[in-house]
Length: 259
Image (tube, rainbow, N blue to C red):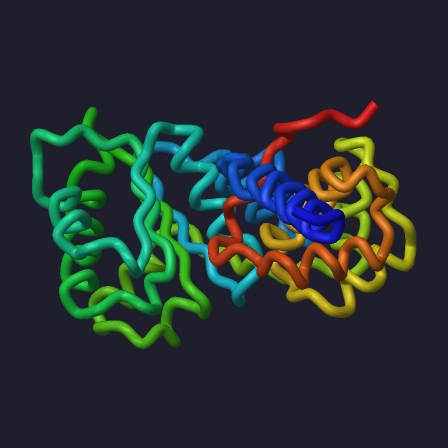
């Protein structure tokens, strides 16, 4: 093999190694401590304080953090997390299987539930209410993209969403998002220049799960390339690897460490 061929093979091998480094990093589950509250401190406190026998409905647009809160609370209390992609029979089982002890059930994206899933959630609300003052009480946490009475759902389910606590989850301000990204970079020992930060805030969506994951990937890519986290490096990363489909799966502090 000539010199040019060897160089090409070496570069290809390096590229594969770097891609494997990025692809094999495991995802981390969101936590309440990792939620950037901003104007949503009251909603965060309501989630933290949600006890068996109480229900809470959160509503807000995409990227507001409502899914983060539901996943985090379900994880913290060994509960069940379901969304519109979950088969309706799983939700129905939680509503009807009296031998199944429940601590917390979180149902996300209720605005997108099909008819079977709506019927199952209706039955789950009835089970929650019947058990609320008994030893079998459990917490019910639901979320959607709009206020309860404007949901495109069956009428009896719309009213149940507002039976107990209701909080709106607001989008973070640009200042809050910028500070959150600075904090994340600082935790990883990553030097994030103003031009990189401003470009991210201007050109990426507002979903904090995706933005946090991007900072993590940039850190790992910088280490793999042995290059500082400059704007050209960020653009190179984004050109090579599209954003993940699940905004809640941020990459944890794994892999090589920064000296």
